[in-house]
Amino acid sequence: MFSRTFLNKRGFLNKKDNFNRGFLFSPLLLIPLFLVIISGFLIKSIQGDFLVSNYLSHILTGFLGYFLAFLISYIPLERLRKYLIPFYFCTLISLFLIYFLGITVSGAQRWLSLGIFSFQPSEVAKLSTVLTLALVLDKKIISTIRDLILPLLVVIIPWLLIFFQPDLGTSLVLLVLTAVMLYWSQMPIEWILILVLCIVTSILYLTLPPFLIFWIPFIGYLAYRSSKKKIIFSVFAISSHLLVAKLTPILWQYGLKEYQKDRLVSFLDPNRDPLGGGYHLLQSKIAIGSGGFFGTGLLQGKLTKLQFIPEQHTDFIFSALGEELGFLGCIIVLLLFFVLIKKLINIATNARSDFESLIVIGIASIFLFQIIINLFMTIGLGPVTGIPLPFMSYGRTSLIINYISIGFVLSILKRSRSLRN
Image 1 (cartoon, rainbow, N blue to C red):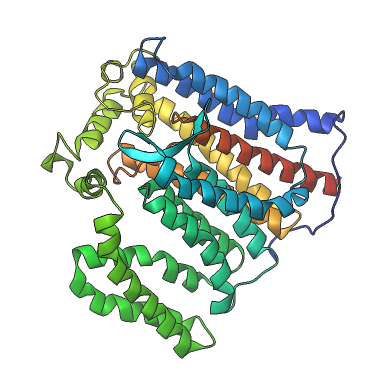
Image 2 (image 1 turned 120 degrees about the vertical axis):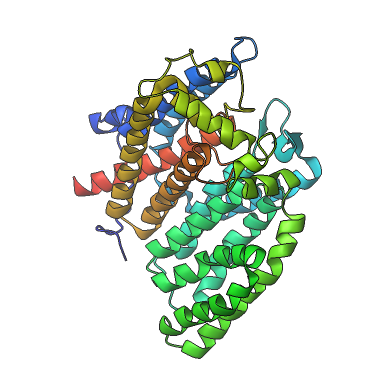
């Protein structure tokens, strides 16, 4: 379909081979580890007191994830195919249990406790959705409306469970990874636009309803020119966007908390509510700007130490980076992210099967979207949506899932190289 090589099933590689041991020092492992260590120092700076700081937990989890990803790289993903559907349903069950047994932290009920530790099912859902969607789209080209039903069903169920937690950030991630994976499976670009532009339809309904008079027919035109069954698909697209418009006030009213609504609106004018919805955005921009070109130095950020930004060690870790390592430190970190994403895209392009290629591109889309949105959020170009910065924001579930994802990518890379050799 889109892979440069074709499926050639093989078993485990020889663990004594230097080829395998070299993966221990792969940039795919070293770049995340470097980001974890740097963010560990930033977390230490934010929280100060060693006894209450999460920096040691973050770094130790990072090293655990590093070796976990290396071990996972020995597992051929083809051997895991039969477990993916059960894994997906277990994830749905954990998301459902959140509503009855979930732990509330900072006003959000998103965690489940297993006694000695707690975890965030929505983070697991990102990976399980990628794996299941890759299984559904494997060797399948989306050419009819019927072809879309199962892939969208795979995504809609966890999306609804996550959105109403409420967790707006993760629900957006699911939408983006779905659009990217559908595109990668050669779905027509017009169809992708029709799906993605549902977000625009929702925004227009809330802000400029009269514009829908022109917007909905435009959606119908896109559908008309992109399908053989022009009339049927146009009616389907128009009906879908009208349904989205009708559901938007319900989702806005019952799906989001008041603080989330304030954050979504206040980024357009943070000064309107500087002590409320706009507080995080204003303080984050001040912290980044105060760092200048070289920054104040690790553990030396005054605004960071004084904790002007609540929960800065999670979603706003980039603001601490900007203050303490300055513009130069931010550029270095962004370059490392660029190298990581570029390698993931290259691996997806050269994967030996459609299934493996879809998994890698899905993982790459999660990382890239979170990086972009988190960066925009911290510099005031986007609303505060609660999306963490991969490998840098504190969160043990997120960090472990990110490393497991890297382990799957290494497994795919290892087998694609073994095929060429």
